[in-house]
Amino acid sequence: MDLAALYIYAYLVGSVPTAYIIARMVKGIDIRRYGSGNIGGSNLVSTAGKGWAVPLGLFELFAKGASPIWIGTYVLDLDKASPALMVAPLLAVAGNNWSVYLKFTGGRGIAVALGALFALAYKELIVFVAVGLAGWAIFRSSGIWVLIALALLPLWSLLLSEPRSVTWFTLGLLGLVSAKRLMSNWTPLPEGEPRTMVYLNRLLNDRDVSNREDWISRRPTGRDGETR
Image (cartoon, rainbow, N blue to C red; front, side, top):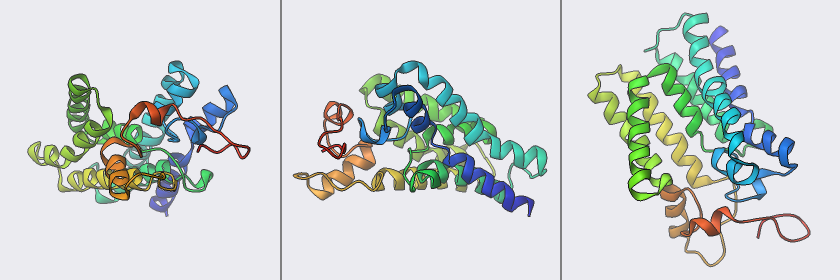
């Protein structure tokens, strides 16, 4: 019963659409209709301002990502290597990506994943951040390097001799983030773009089109207020 309660908590707290709430409070807008349409930090910064990344990040990292693990270990007395514990942060990421409060739309789960790694496997977190930042500094492309850093996590967990459950956990993170990128927020494929290219852009660049500026500068048009 306690474990079921932890899982329900993890999914529900993960589902809290923090960026959506902040954008509504600060700008009075539906963040899903602006820029990338993503309910996450990058889109919030471009629509509401850089300062809002701080409260967003703190909630995503610690309330969503880390707290299910802390509750599992310090309240339920679960071992950090327990497979049962690994389910909780994965449910938090799933909640973030497919929020029950927003008709199963959401963000990409990266900040939530970082919070979970902080509480569960800090060595992998350090490597993840190092690879992601190095890739961005050299190539100025965050989308693909976040994916590369995420894809390398299972390998790093093996090299660091982590419990097998941690390796499976990192594979679960990769699967959830990749699935969300491919599915986007149930948005239709853009007209005039080959289907294969759209899915490739989604997976590698986390957007539907090749040009980043075209993607993040989108604004609602038309009487229905939807982005065209």
